[in-house]
Image (cartoon, each protein chain N blue to C red):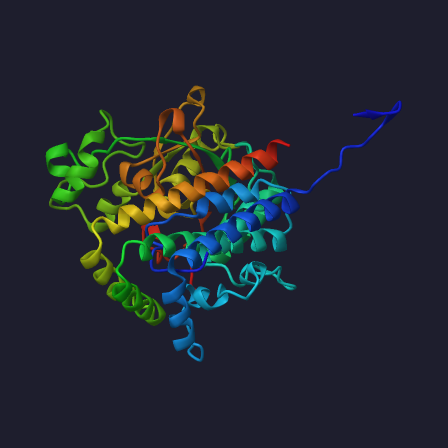
Length: 301
Length: 108
């Protein structure tokens, strides 16, 4: 913009100021609407419970009583914030996404270190992008949908799922025609253990063949990857699964970096196709095999 | 976000993630998340109270102060048809507005 031949710099409004202004205005409207419609009962409730310790939602009624400015019911910027007053999942997502890049690309060693630290602390287990000197080609990438794997010779979709609920949720994904990269999980249905069942249920396929040094040390690295536990995290909702590597893939040309069993994908709320999303996948250091496979919750602080 | 009786049916993580993409300090994010949380509370409270009689509004507020979520849902399901869907709809509409706001400041 120009004024009398001189450029006028456009005033730059920060993201924060812009959103704060818009949202404070919206908040005032919502507040007014609530009190206009239900003022009498809210006032009565506020007077009745003035001296009580109230829960968060009930407390808002007092905070938004007429006569108290709208701004005072909006949380103020804390001085020593480490997301102390947020819920556990929000805190985790903020800490995590401060380090996860916006574009889906291989992480730098610094990013892997920082993200590994956040995950280790948040889930109470030691995770890292490298274990015993071995790492995958990447630790952040798009995940694709895999099919069920045959657990023993003769395993079919009719024998595979344990409950009617599982049939309804997972039958449609079908069985992969071939076996996993390390063959059957068990020799027969009668010798199959719970561990075998869970290894198939919560399996992932990773690009072992693209791991640095794989061609030179195929045998050693293949043994390392077999059923290796990994923490797989959807950075958009904080959901996480302890999975195991039970297959190799997908091909590089697919644009995907790993695949998840139907159960893994369902829990992470990830889908394949145009709406495919990225996950973080880090090795779990579990030498005594004490961490169970399956969904994992954030550690209580 | 703080836990509320409706937290299991109202997802807010997408807004937290969207804020992560903006140029904000930790304190600023916390402040904005606080506004989101409070705005959702107001909108949902308004939607619920609008479905109840004066007598039931008082009972609902009393139950809310006890934070017994099971009791709250039992009460609401007994009084209002499809209350879950109604709460989800209100939250969805507000969240969409907030997402649009985030998008517009990002594109400036």
